[in-house]
Image (cartoon, rainbow, N blue to C red):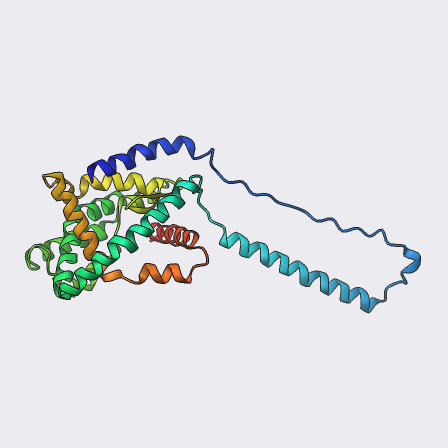
Length: 276
């Protein structure tokens, strides 16, 4: 895990210098209408004909204007200069999910009671409290930081090291989760470019740097030996996947282009979280 995040940080720095070279460019075209018809063969138009032509012109003009607005709304507002790398990593992660992660998660779900899996999920969520707490502090979200601290206290003590979640009984402690990528976004730092990492999945330059920072805030990263830390992370991933089997399949089945749909969904989700 440490080696993987180190690679993420190094490649992120390398990609900064290359991002502008791979930026995509758009091509715009224009249409000219010629009126060089023989006026001798054209009788003078009546007022009704002129009015009808004006209405038709306005109708088509509105259509083209709406079409331009729809295209601008659907346009991806993030650079994707490493398209070949990203598509290769998309297919790698896709096969990794269907060939390894999903079968293991299904088998794990079949042999493990739901209350056990829920307790494990609560534990891993509780132990990553420093990531959310520091992210709230960096955004000057005092109320959210207090809520995160209170939840950690209740769940660690009364919830037996976080396997229980008694804090759910206090609605005022239910705040949106924060991370370093969101904090950087609140500071006005741009997304940079879109990137897909092996195993880690979709990200941006900003979120990749945030992920590297979160490594040092995650207590699991300090577990020795490193193999044990990696094993805990893998177990957390399998346990979390056991609750989400079918979500990725539904997105992929409904999408005309799964790669583009995944990119749009990720970028839009991150934008929404930064706005919160």
